[in-house]
Image 1 (tube, helix red, strand yellow):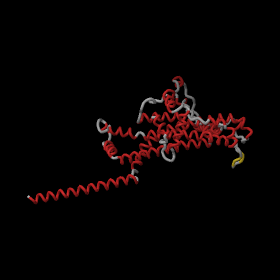
Image 2 (cartoon, one colour):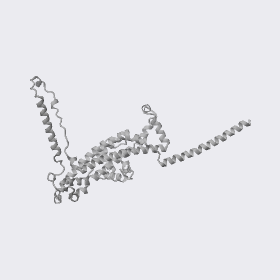
Image 3 (tube, helix red, strand yellow):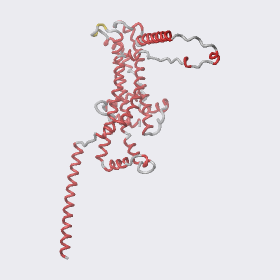
Image 4 (cartoon, one colour):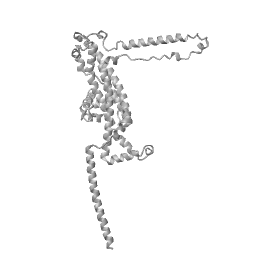
Length: 381
């Protein structure tokens, strides 16, 4: 399957409308396979190193979908910033510095611009690859579904599923126009799902590149104290119970503890995010400091890039999995309800209708002639 996708993408057939052009898919796929020496090396890596289930067998349906989800997560995590961008980070920092609308820029502002310059395009190309893989696999499930429908005419499936499946399949096989209409509507539904997937992932990418500090902030870690739920030992139960504290005092203690937890969490969330080094935080950008600070900034940007790639990999898996439910429960029904003939198909149908009308008129003329002959023969008797 991956080899077929690579061949199709190289020919420019992996696009899906204006949001995903064929040449963009070709460049994204070539970049994903480049560090492995081609799609064969990438397939061998998935099969031998990552050990994705079913990587060495031909699958379709749900098994192929699960394999695809694992593959796009791996592909997203393998994204790396271009080496040229890391080498030229000093020049890029000087170009991004200067005076802005609100006065002199700080290193945080420069780091955000560098993050947008370094991370956006490589990760956007990888997102195009992910969307193209999802769209390509879903579009190629038409034949698998048609083959499954053909097995419902006989056997136990005939009693479980509706007999309309077999009838509709017979209509599609007998009428190329109907088959083209149904397949085109299904492809449109898949494109709508892929476009929504691309929008969701692009929103996360843009927000993280514009403000990487928020992405790198410490996360809230809830602490569940189960000590109060542990049953006391029997020896302690036999002893005299301690005098209970007044309700007002217990309420005051709980409120003070809650305030303390909130203050600690606020300090933790508003503290350093671990992005820039401490000596560059809250400091006005000076081009003279670029030479000494560039290696540290490059390391922090690479860390931010890896964190963002991991976030996008997780979201790509989740959003792609949810897109299948959206396709089956909503998009397919809407696409099938909106089926209509285009101008070319209407012209073909009108020509066919005219041809059949001429044949019908000829048959009626011949039938009338036969009836006249029968009438004449009966009168001659």
